[in-house]
Image 1 (cartoon, helix red, strand yellow):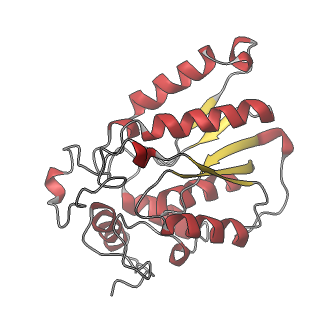
Image 2: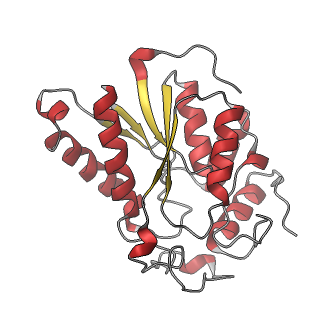
Image 3: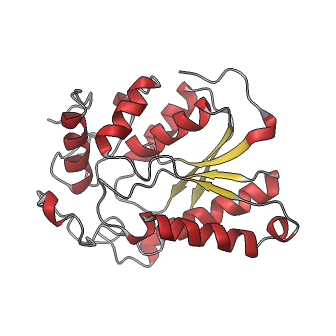
Length: 233
């Protein structure tokens, strides 16, 4: 699937990590006719292979507007993704309601704020984020009530919002299981071999197969009756 006709009346900022969820989210936005402006954040994450994946996927889909912003959240640490904290492995899926050490403090609030700033300068009213509240690692900033709260804040705290140009935060994956997300992406022609999900990839970028992200991804493909194209070696 590649971009054909862009609708300049439906400009949208897409928070894009290069992972399974954000790539599916991007594909849904394209299917719905939005003109994508991709925003990838290099926040000091140890799994920076996803940034390379984001660049690769954006080029494959012929998305010209792709911004990569450096925000060094590792300066604060506090997460296994940004600090010298061991990434949990082989966690029991039944305990995924607990908030794990891979939670990055205020990450989605930072990301959405950056997307909001860019949206306002582009006179764009739509922001897409691939958060999920079903098959996920228990992060508080992936819940529907958080998204609703941020959308309200966006419309209170911006010139555009005060002038009546309401912002909409789109979360097309929020009530999907991982299997449903994967099936939706496959129907849209998403090439999941180009994505990167692992929290603790090997030196060559191969997934570890044992972190929460890998566990949820593999479970999703199994339940979707599909084969994950990544090489778990």
